[in-house]
Image 1 (cartoon, rainbow, N blue to C red):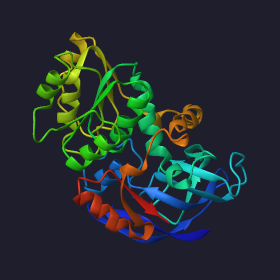
Image 2 (cartoon, helix red, strand yellow):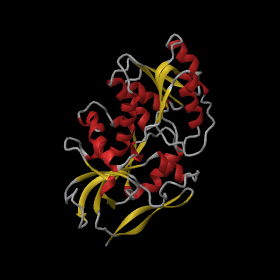
Image 3 (cartoon, rainbow, N blue to C red):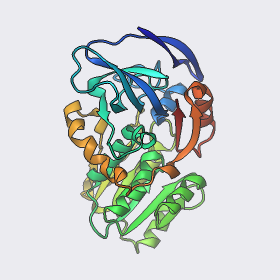
Image 4 (cartoon, rainbow, N blue to C red):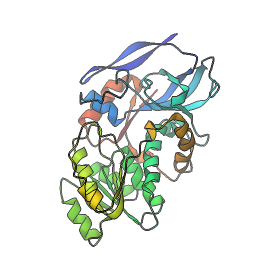
Length: 326
């Protein structure tokens, strides 16, 4: 047994660093954290918003991150001391050390530095949605909501063949990042009518793919979901990436009557065996330098400063991804 400092959420807006005992079971490994990062779901819990009862408790926070294996349980054969790993599960990564079951760990690609590999979970989630979008050469795509996965998609969809990528958001900062990473048109929904602008841009043809990436804590989740279905052409594809943790009002008539295929990619909610196949594939575009993650990292704190980092994320909606360094 060893002790570490971990981020404990004791109530709405009440996050603190406390001492926690770590015990390694026979099918678990002990990891020295290199870096963690804050997910939109963590911010939702911090804000005291409704959390579905089929989720694990958001108590000791942190399900994104990575580090080096320090010790392996007696039944662990998948990892050994010194292995670099990426975390894909709720195992308190906002800590200097964390313990995780082997089913929620993946080896970091050998050709990827740990700063990026530690973002493996949110990268893989976004890239899986890009694959599910099935973009074809020449497609016009709208990305509605520029969180981490949305901004990742701006780059990846273009690299996979989209002729035009339209980036839609409420934040001028997010839109600036989108322009700098390949978006052909940016639209601020607080300043102009996005559907009218898209009809003008596409000569009323709308978009082959609508990529919705606004959920979790964001009060615009319903607005942006409905906007995405309206801007997707007949027989087009609509992708909705984030978890919508509270009910939304959405008329599905257009999706049915206009033969729109709607998909809800959910990499993290498939089996560990499914992820074992997909994660290495999903990381390849990043490992090979085809996707630039650096512009999406808008804040850096130390793990011991997690309460300050979360407060910053809560107060500043221009943030995309805040990382926590060991």
